[in-house]
Length: 378
Image (cartoon, rainbow, N blue to C red; front, side, top):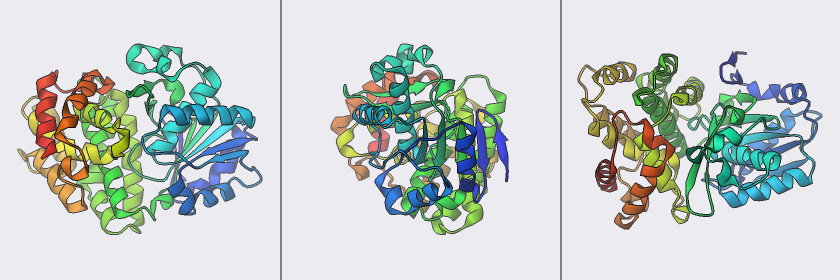
């Protein structure tokens, strides 16, 4: 079974979850706290994970994680973690569960207000070592199991990014078998999140050739090799699920280099709590428009992206992504998922203030984001 060591230790393969008990014991965890969501519990995946813990029993299971985790839940779970005397965490699920687990551990171990640790205001330097965290993804998209950060929607309405090497889970257990039952729609949305990570990581101007290489390999698997199409068409395709989980993992390794305008807009739209917008779906809708918007700015990078995606020289990247979106059932416009024109000014304002805004292939201003929003709105 492959054990990969890059930003953290990653146990990666079909059946990897069986290594959970040994992994927790290695960190001296005797009172694990599980963070997951209602869907994971209903699907029986929580039971599979608790069985894999062997003689260890969870001191508490929090299975109420909401999409786009909130400050209120971070406060609630941090208090629970302290109250039950937990000494480590298993985060089971998609990016929401893993992001909530990180926010919970940050507050439980550091105290204070969550906004004090936001990356955009210099809060990263206040973050030090957290209690042990083992992350087990059940989707192939966010890459939070190896990410240096998390996202949280604060009570003041801002959707903030938090970033620190101390926020990387100690171990990621990536078992593609846990994604075999993922519905086609969620497979598509989370898969487009992974593809967007790979593409934006390559495009951002920060110099990090190894990260670009990892992102291009992930893109080759998910897009050029057709793994996302195959996983959506046949959720039981084990090889496609393996490649998609690897692409998700690689996308997160790559975006240590940074992200760009697609994520700035998606973070800004995702803060609209009442609309319950899925981050991966937002990325998928915005991505074709951004690629067309910057076509010609970085021709060498566009050439490498075309090669990884299996496209001909000079192919329109935006059109290729839009065609994939249509093939896997991603809505074409923001209007189709409930976004209104009246949401535009706020989304643009928050995009300009988002940490990912600084990672565009060329500097963006308000006009760039307004144009992208209008095109994506439909």
